[in-house]
Amino acid sequence: MADWIIFALSALLTLGGLAVLVTSVLGLFRFRYALNRVHAAALCDTLGILLMLLGVMLATGLNVTTGKMALVIIFLWLTSPVSSHLIGKMEVTMNPSLGSEMNVQDPAAVAEERQPAAPEEDKEA
Amino acid sequence: MRRTERNERFHRWLSEGDTRLDTMLAEEYDDLTTLKHVYESDAAAAEETSRAEAEEKAREAASAPLYTAAQAHAEYDVPQRSRALYLLTALLLCAGMIAVLVFISSQLPSFGKSENPANNEVVERYVEKGMEETGPVNIVAGMILDYRAFDTLGESNVLFTAVCAVLLLLKLASSGNAPRPAAAPAETEEDLILQRITRALLPFILIFGCYVILNGHLSPGGGFSGGAVMGAGLILYYNAFGAAAAERFFTIRTFRVVSVSALSFYAVSKAYSFFTGANHLPSFITAGVPGRIFSAGLIPYLNIAVGLVVMCTMYGLFTLFRKGDI
View 1: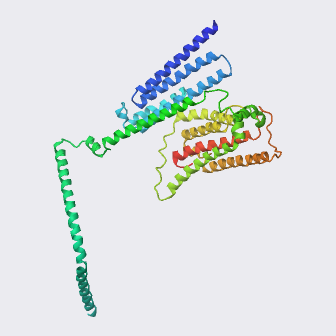
View 2: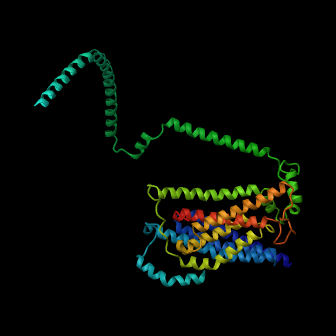
């Protein structure tokens, strides 16, 4: 009985992760602008990988491999948001016609807003 | 006075000479003029027709409201027929390629059969006696660094040569009178998030790279993969902290010393082992007890050499293309 519950849970988690990743791929292809695409890819990446690896961890039971998978989750959660952040930042600094894609405040206000925001983001990461 | 006289005489002589020359050339000139007339009439006819064509075109252009880009495209593009020919050829070539590949893959021996040609005495020997003869638990390390060590030396040298060639091209371009290639791209402001994450992760990345290299004869891994991990870690450091910080520990001098000494160590040690092995001389390099960290003869040390070369190559190529120098 317990086996079946664990199997159902892990299947549920894996399928949920798969659904989230499919959403991410859809967003990546359907959105038009780079920052929208980064949004779709970055958000779904972390959640999808978490759900899928949790499902696999449940399925394998408690052993060394489970610990390694937990390390993989930590590593990906540390690196994937940072790379998305860098892609977004690159787009913002390099695109000269950013105003045609979105409402842009004047740079001074943006910089002012950014200064106190930086440590918060850091804590999250 | 005398001078002007002489000048006058000289000029008279010249003009006389001219007339004499004229008479001498007259006959030939007649021939030439007749020829010229013929050409000219031809040219005139051609010009007339071309002018007529041009006028026609001008009339057409005048009648058309605008000279559109589509017209320009049509005028300067390949004729319609040759484009159709191009498409047809491309399609035929693709179809032929697909047919050949499908045919060949249908003729391949099925996967995993014992009578396949890949299952010959070489593989048998590697699988059955590899651990006993060379020492590593990871037989792949025994193959690439012992049985086929010469091949791996060539691969490491290819990496080194690639960096040398890029260095040569970039240095030649910047030292000659050719203008320097565009200066290093504007260093983006240093990113706090990336720096904090790098500071947290980089030690683990580098230690993992060392582990993969040093454990290459005991578990899957080895010089190539471990070197790639360490090179990627160095590239991450460069991106997070900038060129000035990276140059504190890795310059062109570091690259030169590390790469060359690793390759020389590889060549010398393998030369010793080839020499003793080929002449059946006793060698102090033994396979040891498989499974221990100090075992498998030269393989761990060769893994370190290969890992260093791969790391230097990855980081060197990155910095070369990033700022034009190591």
